[in-house]
Image (cartoon, rainbow, N blue to C red; front, side, top):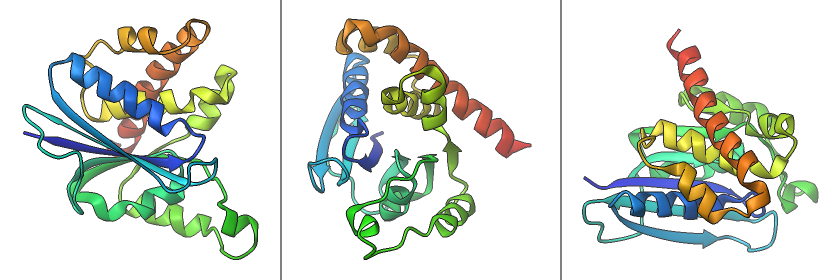
Length: 198
C-alpha cells in the first residue's frame, strides 16, 4: 500500500533536505519512492513543499487532494495552506513557529496567529516547538532534522537505519548535533502524543 507524505515550510528552513534524507532512507529500506518538490518562490521566505510517496510500487510522485497520510509543516500558517491535501484520518505534525511572509511584513496581509493555533488544536495536530529545542541544542539550523525525527516517529519508520543516512549525507562536523536533533524530534512526538492521550 502506498503512503503519501507532504512536508511544507518556508524557503531557508531546510524542508527539501529533510525530504531528501527521508527519500534516501525509504529507498534504502527497499521501498519504491517518488518525490516531487514545489518552490513557490525559491528565495528565502517563499512557500516550499515536497511530496514523498512510498510503497511496493509507486506510479506517481503527485499527491492528490485528500490523499496525504501525514502533513508535516515547518511553519504553522503553512499547515493550513496545505490542509486540503490531507486524508480525513491523516495526521498533522506542526512546528510551533511563525515566519512572516512579504505581504505581512509590508502590512498588506495579517498573520492571524490565535486563529491558526485554534484551528490546529481543533484538528488535533501534534504541535512541537522545534525552534526552541534547536536553540537549546545551540544550532537553530537543526530544526528541520528535529522535524524529520518527528515525522519518522509519527509514521512508525524507526526500523530504518536513519543514523547511517544522516552520517552519509550531512557534513562531518554537523553529524553529532544532527543525530541528537533527530532523536529529540522522535522524543518530542512521543511526549506530545502522551499529553494528548491523557
